[in-house]
Length: 287
Image (cartoon, rainbow, N blue to C red; front, side, top):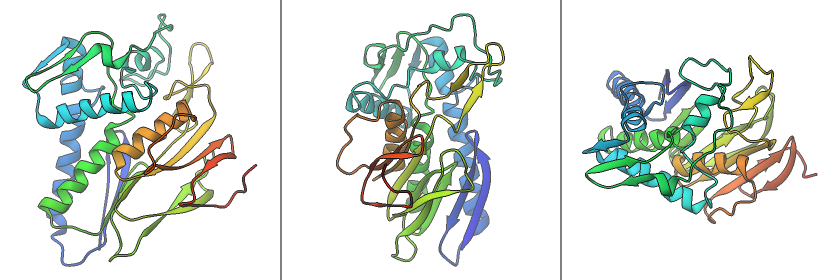
């Protein structure tokens, strides 16, 4: 067994490989290289990233298949969630103060409307076109990275038993065939648990307006990265970390959106349970 701890994509990563006889240094190096490259490609905060180039220049020629896949997945989820999940939120993020310098101070043009993704983004094998607005991959990128890292572990490192935890977004295979139990952190007090869930070759994500929130330094207004007034926290299990990441974000913004049958969730309004799939073992009783 080995553990890898590092910081990437703006969060802390904890990865456990539940096998023996490993080339630990090679696996750790491959993990670090993969996450650094992913951040360099898709971070909104890096001026030379592929995403920043697209946001700035409006056309990105000869995109790599991974970039195409990531944006096509974003378009698919935009349609599947009835436009609730929308990566065309980059400009609103910047204007609200969640920018590259983390100024947490709103800009004068605070009334930024989020554009319809399907009308502004066109993806093909030879080019990507962004007609308007600015993209941010915060609601899908980390889950996508986790799934791609899991693929690398399986295909290139011959690993079959591991847990990838990227700041609370998770993909877990199994522990020698047994499911892996994870703890569901309380939405406003991370030292407390509201329950557990077992994962076996599944992804998990949680999202909450309290996790990344700030008081505007100019107005004092409380803001959050989800740009929602809902006080909904979502815990989601899905076949992939990408799906879990997207649906956790979606449920926080609009908890009534209907998800596919393979997506299980617990939704809290404040600390009251408003929905709980039977997959979860929740300590708190429904109110």
